[in-house]
Length: 200
Image 1: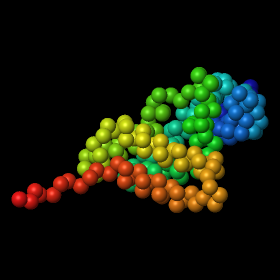
Image 2 (image 1 turned 45 degrees about the horizontal axis):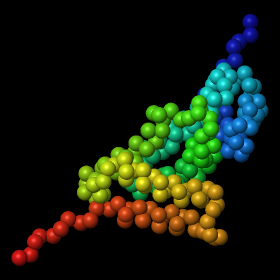
Image 3 (image 1 turned 90 degrees about the vertical axis):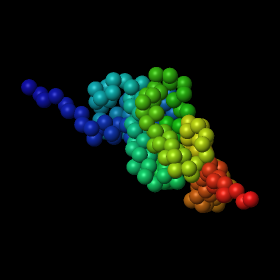
Image 4 (image 1 turned 45 degrees about the vertical axis):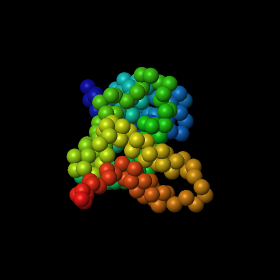
């Protein structure tokens, strides 16, 4: 009797990676499971066995991306808001196809391929925690945590997206630009020093 084929976690990870790359290059509508299987050096049967179908595969890719991103943010949490900003860019530059798939809107028309609410919420969790910590220490303005987190995310996301697309003035020093952006974020949300003693 033939032994059943065992599809390993290594194959699963390979399928997720090649799917992100293929979708990044061709768009989700044009990518087929046959394309994915061929790029990973396996069969469509393996893809169906591990994920169930194209919608489930795309959802798994996005969820896996958000989990990886969230883990990188959690690892940088002890370094504060600037550390999170540095980790944000580092992860995006190391996973450009995943980053564009997660945040570029390629799956907007695929309503059944959206990230799970839990995975997306976990991704911004470390940033919100860092905002709360800084506010508790009196170093950040006492605005709503969700507002500050969204504003900071938007600022770093915008610059990272420009860098990945290479949309900017010729010869842009992206390292220097990003450092300047992080400095600007810090200045815009830093709490003013407490007033000194009243002089009579």
